Image (spheres, rainbow, N blue to C red):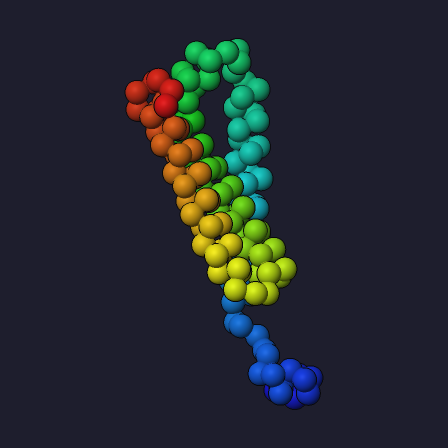
Length: 128
């Protein structure tokens, strides 16, 4: 406790003990985003065509659908972690709670729509 400032001791401001976990999750998701995006670019480059039927046939395969769902989960979780930091750093009033709640609803909802679309194509071969 000796390395804290006098003002920090008076106000009781200290480590929230959450930063390391958040930082590690951000780095893990960025690494998985890099690997999965490379997979996506290479997979799309190897397709014979980029028309609607070629893409739906490609996504109908489990070798494409499973990494695509993993990519959606990783991207949206990384997105949520990053915007959470921005909101926590720049919102200091009671609107912080509302913004974090809206962020969670938006990311879960958008990820659910994307996952549903991928799974619908994977299981039925038709778009959502």
